[in-house]
Length: 171
Length: 285
Image (cartoon, rainbow over all chains, first blue to last red; front, side):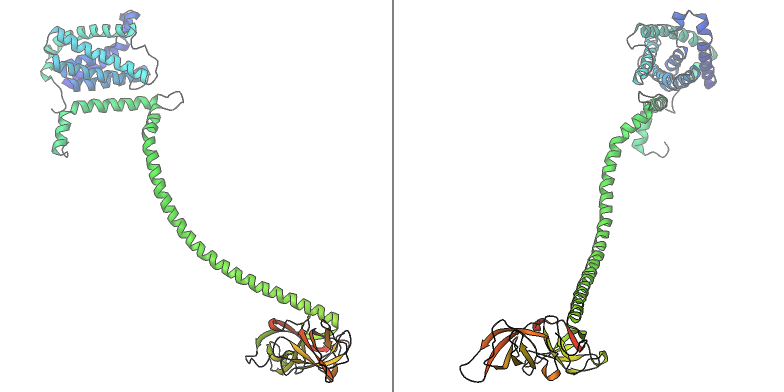
């Protein structure tokens, strides 16, 4: 059940990123939104590091494959984002808005920065690390992550997938 | 992890998430680096692999180079030793050949000299090699490698282009014995080339001869050339015998005496010419 739910979430985020986001939001806003990263952050904050990393990896690689870019750039960003979200959740998550915001924003910031680092490491085109666009992307995605996380938390509680919290590697 | 030992299993369990993260990141980095090319057109993966492996390859190359060098040197030295042995044998063989060829050349040179001598004097002869000397210190004989089968007969004169050597005193089918002119029992009728004074040459068993029966009135001087007189029919006339080294003239008696130094290298004879006849009679002049 949980894996089916994950599959739906992942597919939905990828589809929405490429179809709905560019049409619904203005370009200045749509350019900053990274729905797969938001989804990886949500999964990590909700189900832990392993779930965050694996879902981030799947999302990132699919995103790279569908966008025709270098395979792995988004993958790394979202793996690190997922791991950071899960890590912060374990350390600080006490189900308060402030801590949830901290974990989600941590995941988003880590995801965006790691993607930028990879771009710079391989001399690929991308925004400067300290550019306004980066800060904007972090802020917008953190906001989106907070909204989606709040919405999905209620939805997941209603459908009962939250009972299978803390997905791990047999630990 | 079922096969992992205790501490290893604990480590993997404790750090499973970190390990998973590392694996995922490493795999992603590899995937990216395999696709992206640097300014030189080489993929990052290839460049990293080369950069990472270069020191090891260099070290391994040096180590294998050393061992390879030792290994090759061993076989090389092994070959060198074998080749050295072969080359030494070859050098020895070639030295022997060279020596033999030198000897042959010397003999050919001698034969040519004899041939010219025969042409010049009109004498006919058979070249022979000295193969031995008399073991008796009281006689001066040599043995030559020509005998009856070669047409050698007793009393045949033996000479060299430099001068008279002696005469054949014994023959066998394949060798002959020659009495040298320095032998004590040798007698050779001679004459002084300048004054035509006649005498009998006797050996002294040393390296010299003595001229006897030399009339004391004859003009004989040191340095005069002495040749065979052709008397008695054994030696053809005109063969050079030697040079007078000393004249002994007493105040009394009928004769004077002279010491003669043979022209032929009596002490180191190698090849001789046995005279079998003459194109122009018996004389060598």
